Length: 282
Image (cartoon, rainbow, N blue to C red; front, top):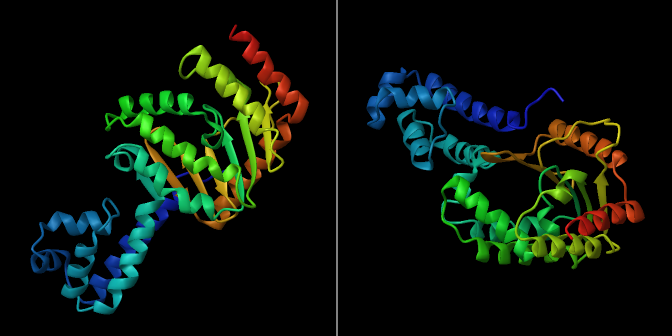
């Protein structure tokens, strides 16, 4: 894959910036003139036109009013909001704690028919137990320096994950074998988490695969990502959630997922790996 996970976000921001520049030039205004009309420092126009910042709704209205282009406001606002959602820093998403973010994703989960999930570092959120989720979110809040509401956030995650038992949804969940050994919470929490994976993989709507460590790689380990039907990919990096909607990038992640799935083991072989890890906990 030649594109980076954030390329769609960067392209969307660049498109907004290009539109702003075009509106200004069509009005025959210099950057300094536009800044003066809007009551801004002149550097703000440069930052907006070079995609170093996204405009607020008020910025767009002021820009279009100065350029006598009120007909451009609604479209620019819509494009800016789309661009803003593509790349969002975790600190911003979690500024009031993690619970609200878990709750905000419910409509997306309920509206998705087929989930394809790959995790190289943690158990997929859709198959986490409360203790594991709470321990993980506690670490995340501590690292990010955001409000710690991990017990409530874990409860919200489990509520969100009820889709795995409801409706006509289908799931393909893939993890790297190393995930089974990464401990979040006490040994008893981990034992409960691994035991729950055995329950989840028995559901008729779930295909749960594990990529064995000794497997010859046909795809390198990737960042954690989720594919919602064929309309969106969410990628999780250390600092941000990236929402990809460009068809070519969705197709790239779909190809990568297929390769990872082909490397994975399912059914009895996957169960054996989980049972082996449970035994290792003592």
